[in-house]
Image (cartoon, rainbow, N blue to C red; front, side, top):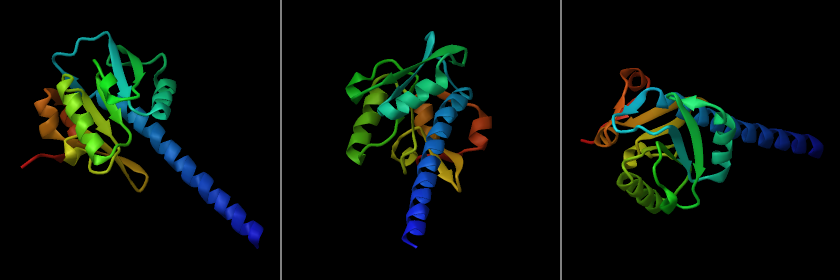
Length: 170
């Protein structure tokens, strides 16, 4: 009987671990797909740069986007060990941060020429992040802070807005 419980426990751990890995891969792919529906007049770089504050997610993005283009630009993934290293970038992906750290990161991104901020953190869009990726019944959903994206001069196509939860500050 103990062996059965051990096997069930290992199976549950493996299944949960696989589900999180699959969600991470899906989030990585969504970043590239969303970028096709978001533009900004003053971005004329030769590269599409995604900055990440998490080494393992940066490695995942590197594997997903090596030799790939987003919006006809070669993709460059930059791992940041701290927000102070953030320079020119198209997207900043924030995997995890305390509320105080998140406030600092979002303020820094805003001062660094309003980089598109994306995260899967709960309440990210409500805390002035631009796009939040979340899952309902293992299906990805998007929550877009429309006021914040407009402040940063991003134009989001209606196609993306129609499939997203849009929030606006009142």
